[in-house]
Length: 458
Image (cartoon, rainbow, N blue to C red; front, side):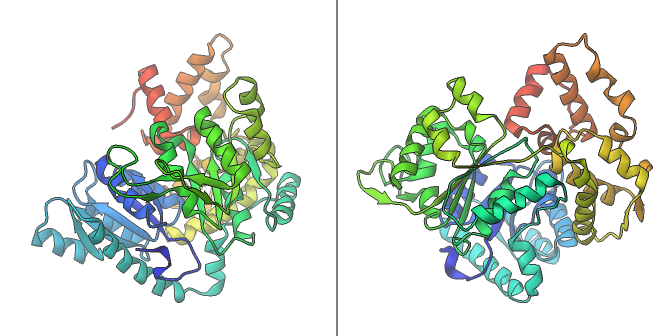
């Protein structure tokens, strides 16, 4: 299966939902090997959370999962995201489950254990359906999907937009820095979409999710027999991005050994698959992002100085939302339009008092946290205008809620412990949502929950 089999003007996005990590990994390996963009969720709640934050063309959805089962998730997807094609996954095939899946709106279902060919054929069928729908979408809506909007009237955002306009048509390497949730990936995608490589692939990689022992194989690919279980030759992510753009998200999470190999790729624009001695030419543009200060990482010996200078050709720094409060009103309007459409709501705006409260809040999760808040209000509150009573207590009652964090007698660890517990409480134990607000990944959050023995709602 090749990504060009159904020609579109957008990058197909797929979400794999299964409580078995080994099944998710198997599906992702097959689909990413075909050049598709794939993300994963471990249960129905996480699936719906992710779909609320970004659009997916195809969802591969397990029927039997703890908590909300696949059929219930399917019904919610059909209600909220009618254009998304859903393929059910089952280890217990039956006529009843097939009929129920079809009645609830699934395109088809895949039986575990499955062959790669069966998976590819179903995804091909789903892609063809998606392509036909896409051809019927008005041009202005296609453009909206191709380039997510950068919103802001502050001087910092206007300077950012001007910088993107200048740098996008070039081949220069760009390093985007800023706190988690400020929109670094959005900037990288916008640069690609406005570049001369826009018709080719944009390949983003979350560096914190790369397993150190497998990172070379993931980036460079491997030949058959290169190591145990290397049963066939596999193209790496660099090869998939050839002639396009490669984006390293949170690049500071790469180990020093991988950094050295990446430096050679940037310098020489060539690489070798694991287990091969043949050098392959590479034509890619590299963008990178970090929520850490890479200069300080260099001083600590955690990041190579030569690689830092190779990446920092054109630096772009995104200010945290608390330092550009004049953008909050515009962002609220933007998210209202987005989620009014997505959630079938009709909220006309926000009151002056409620907006003042949002402006006075510190937004530790930045724009991402604001977006999640607007979505939650639209989903949970029956209102035509957002007023103070529709906002959560941690915003309307800041003095009482945050008194615990301003106590000078607390150690830094105790402040961290209490704040993480506070965020887990206000997100009702939803770990992905809490991790997004905290600006860390789920793995780091899980480690801190264990470290501090925190209470988490199940």
